[in-house]
Length: 67
Image 1 (tube, helix red, strand yellow):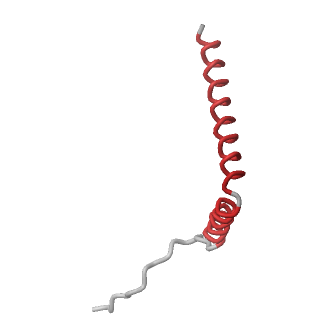
Image 2 (tube, helix red, strand yellow):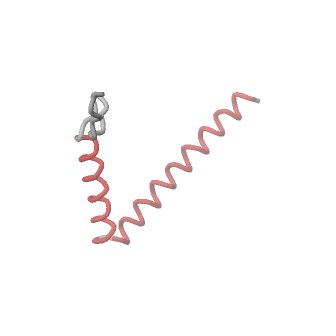
């Protein structure tokens, strides 16, 4: 009988680069929140406000199409 390999196969085409980039982005965001919490809160509030505004605009657009 053939000996079983204890190695876990890695899917072809997987890259470490996306993991490294996402880790760096998360760490950078953490540093910004820790060093400048008030400014970071303002940025998040502005982003959420922009997202809400965009969703409301899309809702009005689709309501206009439906009527």
